[in-house]
Amino acid sequence: MSLALSLATESLIARPSGALFWPERQLLCVSDLHLGKSERLARRAGALLPPYETRETLLRLEAEIEATGARSVICLGDSFDDAASLDGLDEADRLWLTRLIAGRDWIWIAGNHDAGPLEIAGSHRAEVLLGGLVFRHIAEPGAQGEVSGHYHPKARLAGKVWRCFLADRARLILPAFGTYTGGLWCHDPALTGLLQPGALAILCGGAVARAIPMPRRA
Image 1 (spheres, helix red, strand yellow):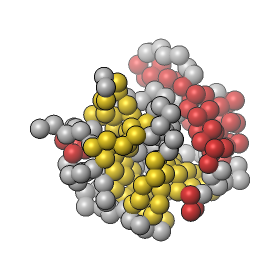
Image 2: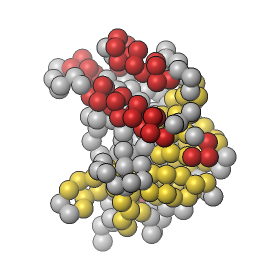
Image 3: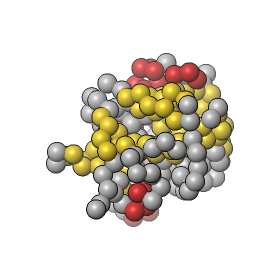
Image 4: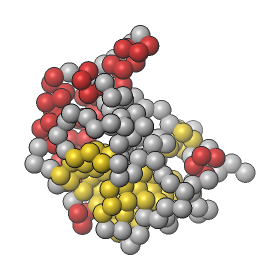
């Protein structure tokens, strides 16, 4: 079950997957896919993780596109784990991604991991302004109507760790959508300094997107 919310008078839907849907524009937004992370870790550090995270992430992304009927997709940066990760994708995974892009207005926002334009279909932007919303990778102090990612927020409830959206009247920070991604506790000063008192943490990762008061350290 998804959760409806509004930002800058726009009606949005936080989905249990961690994706954001804008029904009026048939737009799906995801953040921090970190495709190719296992390959990057092996290449740079010799660390070996099961190399299936890209396929699992693409499977969930495809499911969200099909479930929402999205005609536009915005990826909010750090879509690839570094600039070389695209070249390191298996050919089958790269073709899969190409099929998802085909026929859709697909926008890649630059992140800190993948700052340069990459050789893949879609448009490549530093940020995007649509209606009353601005889409960028890293939140900016004082922004209004801002949708961003970068921090991979997470919260704990009933002894379980949940990825979460963070939302207040001015901004929305998306959770990481990628499979091999860590997270920053939402009571961290980097996040409490951005979000207003009364902000919500919208927990995702299960069957229901559930809103709770954003945890803050006393």
